[in-house]
Length: 121
Image (cartoon, rainbow, N blue to C red):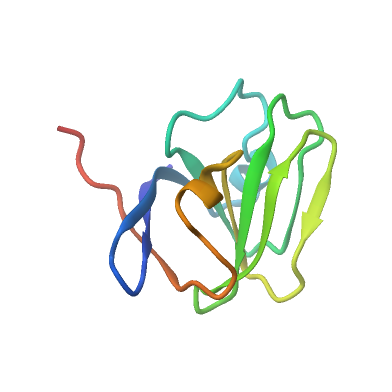
């Protein structure tokens, strides 16, 4: 699974990463299930997705929904286990640790971009 970083389009600031990229049916279905949590800045982008559920998850997450132009259309902050969130205009969902979207200053209307993850030093 490829690793990517999340950046703000206007400033180029790195907001999160590495993110796993879930493109295949299996990757999208599995998502973050079976994990104990996310490391600092870590997360997952689920492509072709306008809804997520946290059934069977062990920790809360933030979900940043973006449209086809990678503009934020909705943020479901601190989504606890056994919940559902959706955004009808979304074409992808970015799952981050609970509180990460606010800490990064992500708001509805922000333009985001995904870049290959920076090499580890």
